[in-house]
Every structure is written in structure tokens, then in C-alpha cells.
Length: 129
Image 1: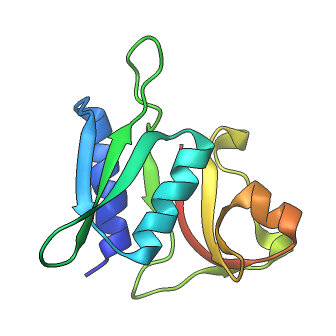
Image 2: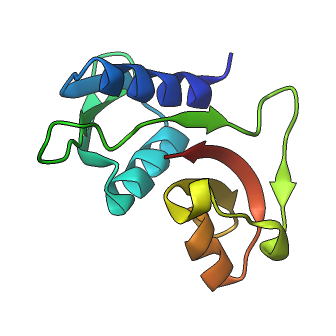
């Protein structure tokens, strides 16, 4: 089961039906992804909620002044059956710079531009625009 893909799909589906809050199962990777999406402005806030068994991440989606969702689309690149890696020089722009490319690098979860600035490559997780 692709838990990161499920998180991205949940965010995309919730933004399409104009939901304010999405709750996804928690993990350190998904929390780091939420943190990176918050820094890039795709989500308004995120919080880790502890339950008796496990944790959840509560994510508040961001919308612009006209009510349009900041998350318009997403594509999972690296899947459990096929991992995709990129070096520093292989990192590409998404939607001519209007989207982001999220990578899992040795320095944590980074967007494509940040990874180029830090001079690190890694596993391409997904594209979001």
C-alpha cells in the first residue's frame, strides 16, 4: 500500500470538493511532507494529533481570495513498484515553474529548487501544482 500516494490523493480530492480540513494517518515521512507543503504555501496549517493507537496529521488546506484551491493537481512519480531517483542535474521544473517537485534527500524532504540550491539529489516523491 502506498501511504504517501494516499496522502497526496486525499489532499487533491479534498481540495477539489473545497474541504477545509483533511485528516491522514501519521508518520514521520508524511509529517515532513506536510511541513514542506506548508513552507511552499500549498496548505495553511498542519498538526500532529495523538490517538490511543497511532497518530494522525490534521491538515488545513489553503485557498486563494477567490476560493480556488492552491492544490490544482498532483502526480506520484516514485512508486513502491518503481523508484525514481534524480541527481542534482536531473531535477526538473514542474509546469514551467508554477508547480513543485518534492524529493526525499539526505537533507530531508525538499522541493526541487531547494534541492538544487543545497546541491543534493534523491528520490522524486511527487509533483504538485
